[in-house]
Length: 527
Image (tube, rainbow, N blue to C red; front, side, top):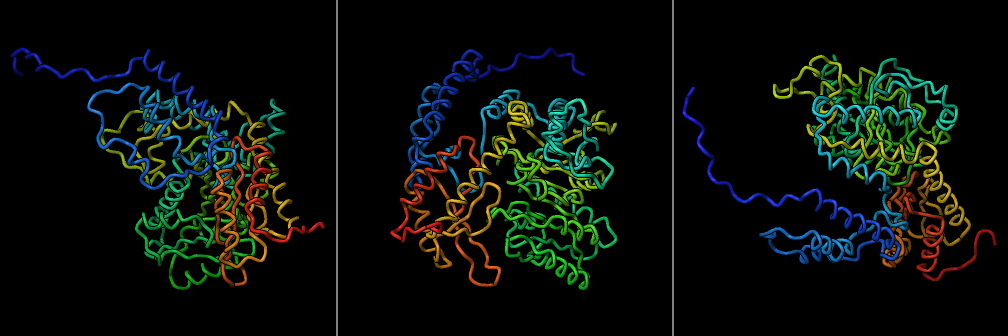
């Protein structure tokens, strides 16, 4: 070792322009004022952006600033260039796609997560980040009525000392597996289905049938993320079977059984079935109990994708649609869709220790630099082994803030309000001979079309475009298969779910629809 003294470091450049806590406090106050003003004036804005492609890009400078700019100037550009060119997802008349309803408690939790700046890949890297998430996911499992085997402990609290909460929650479904699984927060339901498929393929690789070609089963109405996941894991279209749907656009379990029988007779292995609770197109619910029984007998991994509708299971009266989940291997839903938690936040649950072990085997790789005493002892959860990324934000904070601000009762009121609004709209549509319901209402999703329109929806599409061009509402569409094998039919979707959506916004939507309609007979079914 040299005894030569350390030499002075060469001169360093000027210090970067870090924002001081005082400057941050001032900027944060300005930003919060902007956010509050934005929400106070959001109804005056057209719901959908009226921006030509490239307009925002061209409005921004060609090159970055050479020197620091004041926050005031940045915020001015947000006001003048960003905000006017947004499609306003939090607008109370946003009825397109599925909702992405946020809330101020969630915003505060997200702000705190960003400010703390922790990286929760391991328990050791931020114990509170891991354990708050574990507890909050256990709360969610209880709130949705999932069996106790979907929790980290394998047991729900008795709630004997909390009769009001027990009455609000109702009884969870009974467990058929007697070991703990647990939950984790992922980015989206797309990541959840990829994660579940990876675990299913890991189980297949370790089975005695591993030499057989793995087959994945989806319905014709399953989300496109399943097919994307199949591509990502390196399978080919020949590995996918698309199962037809019934008259309600739900997976036909008899057709699934026939497809599995045929594959097994050809020495192929049924590995993964994705059942959807609340399809994107029509909100259809696959018959989960029948599909689960079939998957159990054929030893196929059953993943339940309840991305949108899963939030509604906080209401016990909706849980009849959940029966059969006790036999599923994994379940996911997005609090960032309908449970007042800002994007991104997708809850992914595993049913029992075996499912959890298959996931850990699929995802866990431990280089030396991640080894530590707590992980080696096996007494902690390292969430980096539960999903694809290594690094992870403290996303549980925003969900924790939401659950504590609203409570179970507040979240139930939120869901029930939207379902009631949708039922009211459904009655109005059904009473008017100029329109027809394109599918049965699903919770807060209503589908309709102009009566006697052609399958391509010439009049319905024109109506939807006029409503959207008005700026008073934003709707989207779907195309539904004909159960009798005829031409698929265009339908307008009304997805009610905004945090700010009140009864008057639904009434205004319908008034806008009527004003946008081409002249047609005005007789109604009640006249």
